[in-house]
Image (cartoon, rainbow, N blue to C red; front, side, top):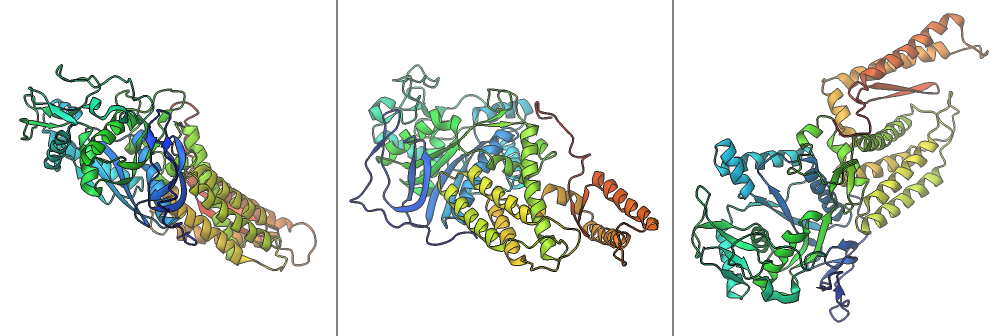
Length: 549
C-alpha cells in the first residue's frame, strides 16, 4: 500500500453545495452531496474536471458496460478495460476507496443471433464461448474482475419490470406490433446531456414511432429468434435498457461512477440516463461519466473495430508482448485521450519497463555489496524519493494523470542510476543501502498499484520457466567474475596485466557477448559484475514503425 494520511476530506456541507454546472450542450449537472475524496476527475456530464464526491464514505459504486459476446475481444477493448482497471486500482490502493464494480455481459443481441445462424449453433452457445474467452483475456491482462458479472438473459424479468415502470411514469409506449419505445419528447430538454446528442439521427425501428429519436426498450420477436414472454407479447430487450436495469438492480437510484468507451456516450449512455431518470424519477442518476479514448492503429484515423476488420485480438497480441508492457503503454497516455498503437510505441513501453527493471537489479546488486561506486549522496536521494511520492500522488489526484506519475517515477530511477556509477576498485567508503532499498520498494509498490510486477515480466517467465535456469546463470556469472578478477589482479600493484592472463579476460568478454543473444545480460561494474535475464534479441523481432504484425 502507498496510501498516506486520511484520504477522504469529509462530508461536503449541504448548505455549501457547489453551484449547478452546465455542460457544453446546456444540460445541468448537479454536484453530488457526500464525501470529497480529494480527487479531481473529468466528468463527461459537465465537460470539466470536478471534485469526486461519493455518496458513501470510503466506497464508490461503479458500473461499466461489458462486452457483447459474439467474437474475440480485441486490443481496442483491452485498452479501455485496462485503463479503467488502473483507475480502480488507484482509487483502492492510493486513496483507500473500496470500489464496488458491476459489469453487464450482453449475451443476447442481433450480432450474436447472426453469428449463431452462421455457425449453426444456439445463440446461448455462441455467447458462453466468447464470454469465457473474454474473461480469460481479461485475466491474462491482469484486469481485476468486477464484484459481479451480470448476464442480460438472466435479468430479463427485471428488464420487463423496469420497462413497465417507465410506462407507468409516462415516458414509454407500446406499439400495436408489440414493440415498446422510450418517449424522448416526454422528457423535453433533459435529453441531450452529451454533446452531439440533440438533433442526432434516431435509431431505425417501427413506422409507428412517435419521434425519430425514440429508441426501443422491447423488441417483438422475429422467426427463429430467442424470445421471452412479456405484457406486450413475445420479444427481447432493446440494447440500452439492459444497462439501466442491471445497474439499478445493483445500486438503486443513485450511481457514483459510470464508465465506457467514448463511442458509447451517444446514443448508449445518453439513453441509459434517460431511461434511468425516467424510471427513478430523479434529477440525476449517475453523478460521473468517465469515457476512455479510442485506440487507433498508427496512421489510421479509424478506431480499432470488429466492423472495420482492423483489429488485433488480445490472444495474438500477447504472443508478442506481455501484459506488463501493455500496461506501461496504457499508462503513457491519459485514459481519456485517443492513443495510437504501433510496434514502435510498444517497444517504447518495453524500453521504459526495462529501464526500471535494470535500475532495480542494479540497486539490489549494490545492496548485496556486488557493486562498488562512489559514496551515495544519501540526503539527495532521500529528498528525491520524497519528491517522487508527492508528485505521484498529486498527479493521480489530478484526473488520474498516469503519464505525469510515470514521469515522476522515471525521474526517481534516473536519480538512482546517477548515484550508482560503478568504479573499478572498492574505496571502502560509507555505503547507503537503506535509501536504495526504500527507493526500490516504493517503485515496486507504485508499479504494483498499476498492475505491473517487474519481477514477473514476460521475459523472466519465458526464460525462468526452465526450473533452475536462474540458479545456473547465477553460478555461471559468479564463476566468470572470479576468473575475471583473477585476470585483472596484480598483487605487486604494477600497472597493466600479466600477459599470460590476457586470454582469460578475452574469454570472459567473449562469454559475455555470446550470452546476449540467449537473453542473459552480464554487466561488468568495475571489479564486479551483475546479471539479468531478458527477452532474447531473436524474440524481439523488429516490426518497424508501420502496422503491427
